[in-house]
Length: 99
Image (cartoon, rainbow, N blue to C red; front, side):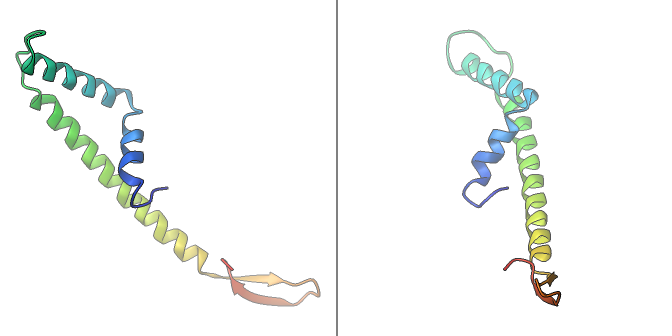
C-alpha cells in the first residue's frame, strides 16, 4: 500500500478523510488565528488542540506503518512459496509462486 516516499502524504490524506481530524485541524487553525492575529480573541493556546491532534496522527500513522510492514512480509512469504503446476501432458512440477 505504501512506499517509503508515499507513506507520509498518503497516510496524512487517509487521516484527514476522517471528519474528526478535519474538525480538530479547523479548530486549531481558528485558535492560531485568534492567538496570533487581531481578528478575535482565543482564550486557549493553539497547543491545546494541535498537540492531541499531532499525537493521534502520529500514533495512527505508526500503527499503519507497522501493519503495512507486516503485510509486506506476509506477502513476500506467500509469494516465495513453491507451487505445484500441472503441465499440458499431465506431469506435475514444482515452481516458484512468483516466476
